[in-house]
Length: 312
Image (cartoon, rainbow, N blue to C red):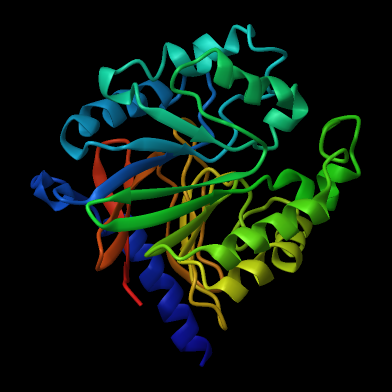
């Protein structure tokens, strides 16, 4: 039994290193509803942020993404102070400047935004045409050629005691009504009738990481039961700065950690790991009536891993 487990972990590592493929036929995105997932971006263009931003734009010419789901930490390290903070230019506007990225960006707050003025992150909606954040948590249903898809954006920092109990560093976390948000998520998912349902937040529910285990335990206790109850298709997040795809016993949800779009970190397999990679990059999600597909893209444009769900 031990040897089988060791063999499986070695296989995951090998696949993580070798299973890459350059996209040469962009027709795979034709007649699909496509959008990007990007997070952990804000490094003022340094590390791999600018090259990945350019790649996102170049690939968008062929993929045609409808929007970007920005799953938190657009700004490192102390968030922003106001809608006029220079970081809006150096972390975002001047970096994601490709014409094909002048589309809607739907963000959530990450832990680094919670170090600053979280209201300013939402208020930037009134400054930028493409920045669209109506609230700390919100939902939107999309329909295209008969395909229906719902995304629920959730505010994860207030779900964890680590942030709620550290008002000096994360002053706005404790102020949020956790039970109100959880009840809202439950009500939205109860009413959801779309072909596909995706929940997007910053922090993972399951992941391999040296970060405090209490983070995942709080997410597993507070958010995961609601997602399992309503059998959502994917939970997509960031925070860990690498790619991870995890399946766990008793759940049919695909738990996705999207890598950093600038500075990535090492990763190794853990319980439930289907794939992991330390490469930086972003993801492309495509949907039609029959399939929901997420492709993890590295900084060279390689598809590292594909997650495919078929309609229920």
